[in-house]
Image (tube, rainbow, N blue to C red; front, side):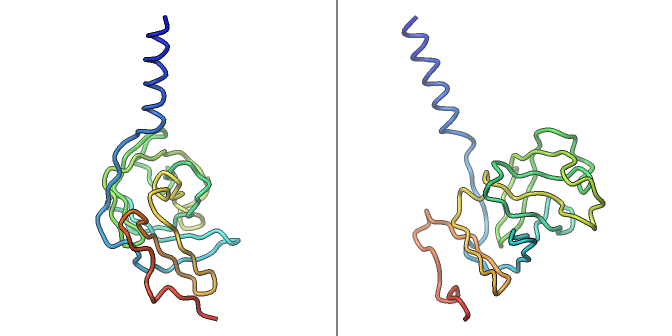
Amino acid sequence: MRRTGTWLLAVVIANACGGEPFSYEGTPGTEVALTFESWVPTVGLTVNTHPESRFLVDTGSPLTVFDTTSFPEFVPGRVRADLSTFGLRISAQPAAAWDVFSAPPDQTFAGVLGGDVLRHFALALDYKGDRGWLFDPYAGKIGRASCRARV
C-alpha cells in the first residue's frame, strides 16, 4: 500500500509541476500598442488565420480563453490554436473556448490572454504611453534603453 501511495503522489506532483513544453518564435521585448479598458490592458492578437482582434491581458486568468462568438469554429471546451501577439508566435497553444462575452465581436473582446502564456514572460506596461512588452526573463536580458518611462 505504501508503494502505491508513493507512486500516486509522484504522478500528482509530476502533473502539477510538469505540463506541456512551451516555446515561441519572435523577438521578446517588442513594443506593442495597448489600450486600457478600466485599467485592464488589451492587446491585438491573431488566432490561427483570423484577422487580429482585441484580447484582455489578464495575469489573473489561469488560461487563455477564446470567445466562441468571435471564433465559431471552436466548440466549447479545450482547444489548441496558433497565437501571434507582442511580436511573438506561439504554436498549438492549449486554451479554452466558450461564449465568454455574449456580445457581437465588434462590441467586445475576442478573448483573454491568460496566465498559461503570460507566466513564461515578464510583462511591462506603460499606462501613460499606451504600450507594453513581453520579455523572456530566462533569456538573460530583461529590458532595453527604450523602455524608460516618459514623464
